[in-house]
Image (tube, rainbow, N blue to C red):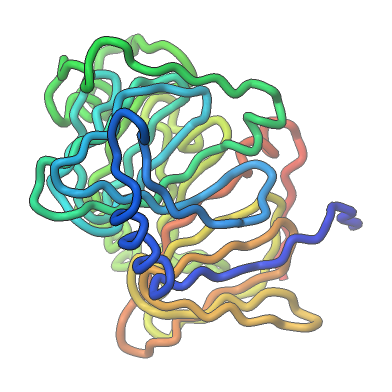
Amino acid sequence: LRHDSERMEPKRWRWADIYPALMETADVVRIGADAFRRNVGLQTGSRTISMGFQIVLPGEVAPPHRHTNTALRFVIKGGGAYTTSNGEPMIMYPGDLLIQPNWAWHDHVNHSNEPIIWIDALDTGLVHFLSASFREEWSEGINQPLTKKDGASRRLYGPARQPAVQYEGAGVPYHYKWAETLEALQELAEQGIRDPYDDVLLEYKNPINGGPTFLTMTCHLQMLMPGQETRFHRHTGTTLYHAVQGQGTMVVDQDKPHEVAWNEHDSFSLPSWRWHKHRNRSAVDPAILFSLNDRPVLQMTGLDRDEQG
């Protein structure tokens, strides 16, 4: 099987470098009318998806806006701030995942007493390639009105819901709580439900149809048990990882193996169609990885492939 795309190489970004850069940026750039975001981006090399880190300081408000990029927030540090999605204040804590489909109104408000930092990931490259990038600013004040209560999306679109869900656009905003996600991951581990290539793995399913998280990208959470080393496999699609906890190594390629060692809060990329396996470097503690990839686009177009070693 030939794969003739330009070769993209795996890369690691150390939290020890990213965190000081975020704090330095926070000293220079103030969020407000002139700046709606403060972000340290990662040069992933992907033509479809991008990932960076955003910080909002206590008392700051990022003005409401919407765009055709699909976006997600995975919270790293801080708690008590909220993102308003179509009128719902989603209060954020570490490990929470917030999804915002394209053209959903959103803003960020930090009324807590500590900075909040989250992963900011979008399908920017794909949207630009398709010449479909549009953006609109909120014109009715510094905040959009709170028309729903925190948790409304989970109640409206959760397992017990109205027979016919009404929504506009490509999906609905939704808030995956860390405590419930971690509990589901631990339940899989306790039941011995493990994948030979990713160990204990779950996908953040679309709340409406049970498909991938978004039409253009999907998210996973995986646990590598102590001392675990997975088997080699490869697949199309770019994958971007963030280490939630623990320490490990991703081994890329079989003929000339290249090791990407990572520690807690480091991030790293896996190019399309590269042999890889994961190893937990701790013999005592499990490691947890959050990841996103663009495979839903490849699946929709019949271009998705995978191969097991």
